[in-house]
Amino acid sequence: MLLADTIKDPVEIWVYWVKTPNGKYRIVKRYIGIYKDRKKRGGFAVFDLVKGNWRGTTSFPTRDLKYLDKQRVGILIYKRRG
Image (cartoon, rainbow, N blue to C red; front, side):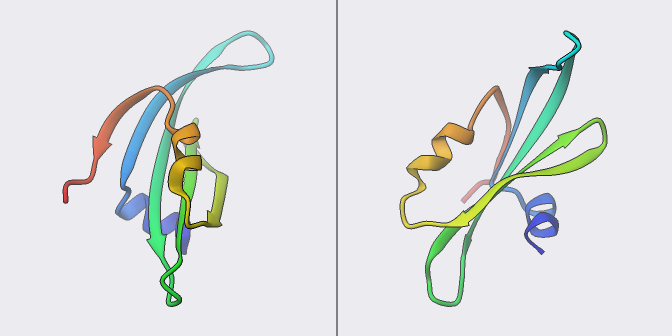
């Protein structure tokens, strides 16, 4: 559910280069979603799109979204308004 919600309505999308173990580079798109659950706790989910495949990077509830700053890498290509 978090993956689908993050893909459909991301808060931010970042693009960055990753060097693979064989020395080649590839582009990664990082989708970030921020959520509130029924207990009104905050949390976030981060998913990477690599060569057409989705990979869960991190996802957990937290009241401190400062950790999310570490997930913001590369170039910001989309930011939800509002």
